[in-house]
Length: 123
Image (cartoon, rainbow, N blue to C red; front, top):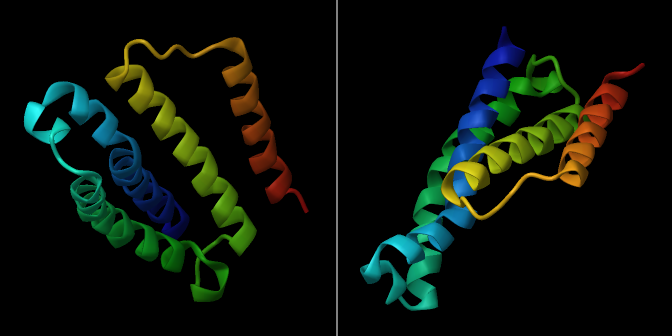
């Protein structure tokens, strides 16, 4: 169960991370006040969102890490996080940026990352 909660927290963390890293690109298109922000303002805005990313990421890693009683070793945690990042990003970019399309080579790259998850759990 601890592994499930760690993964759930990683998903929430990655939603905030994706918003912090890429949300400003969409906001620039939608809000004139945001477009006029200087780069430092955009950075501070993104840092404000990233704060919440860390509020979920740090507990997820602590909870999921084997040496803290969780089910995952460090490499497994990182690979799980990367796959979650990719899935969240694909969903975000498909929903928020209609001009971005998901192509066959993107799908193949995703399958290779899923293969990486399989391999990292292999004994």
